[in-house]
Amino acid sequence: MIEIESVTKVFDGPQGPLAVLKDISLSIGRGEIFGIIGRSGAGKSTLVRCINALERPTSGRVVVGGTAVTDLTGADLRGARREIGMIFQHFNLLSSRTVFDNVALPLELAGKGKAEIAEAVLPLLELVGLSGKRDQYPSQLSGGQKQRVGIARALALKPSVLLCDEATSALDPETTKSILALLKDINAKLDLTIVLITHEMNVIKEICDRVAVLDRGSVVELGSVFDVFSAPQAEVSQSFVRDVLNHDLPEAVVRRLHDSPPGNPVVRITFTGPSANTPVIAELIRDVGIGINILHGHIDYIQGKPYGTLTAELSGLQGAIEQALGHLHSKHLKVEVLGHVADDDRAAA
Image (cartoon, rainbow, N blue to C red):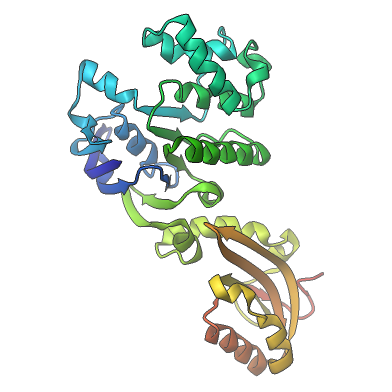
């Protein structure tokens, strides 16, 4: 559906040429929700703008639905862009137009008549849950409602691709979940290919099928969301996963952690696939005889597969703790020692 072939983008900077994208190649399938994640400055927004030719690559090409958009100009490019909808972080709605008229704008610019516009816009407002808001103005809407208008407007010309550039970054967590659920619903109902740009791993985890991790203009990791989340290989990928998991640690524990012994280790155990149903804690208490102070536990499903984490303080003789860690590794579990807490400064305090 989308082929990004050896795309490089170089800008003229104050210190000379600056390569923002470096020989990027990606293949995105029809109907896929594909995530592109990176820190600020990684090049992700430039990459998504290359897909609809708002930016021209310095070298390489982009093919969408069999059409090389990087080779097009003028009317041909405008026609190809009708197949590519786009939503933005800041909504970009026209304050002087109602919800209905904002969604209708692309159809008006395409020369459609009033009856045809109404026939297209009203089902879209129903699709995004705004049928009752058609005559309201952007100033009367919440952030989530504004983004729903932006989504409906992006779908007005019935594109086959929807590009989402940090589409949830300006929204609170609850609204973000509702917008992501809407995008997933639209993907299923319309067989729409979605490319989602973000700097938040939680967004990727929520709805994406595959993810590419960008760092300094290069793709450093590519794979299914489950594989990248459960076993990240690149340093920046590991950092993104830590950003999500470290929210699980109580602040009181974080303050008491120090990097090395003495003290009881605080470990995070990751369960994936069949290991999610393994009673390892009961086995450790029964067979090894150590103390386990559970600090946090959570199980989630990523792409239908169980993914769980358990954070706990282990206490006991050093030999028993080493035996416990060995037992966990023998079960093919991922075990990360987050730090240590002093015996008289218990993590549970």
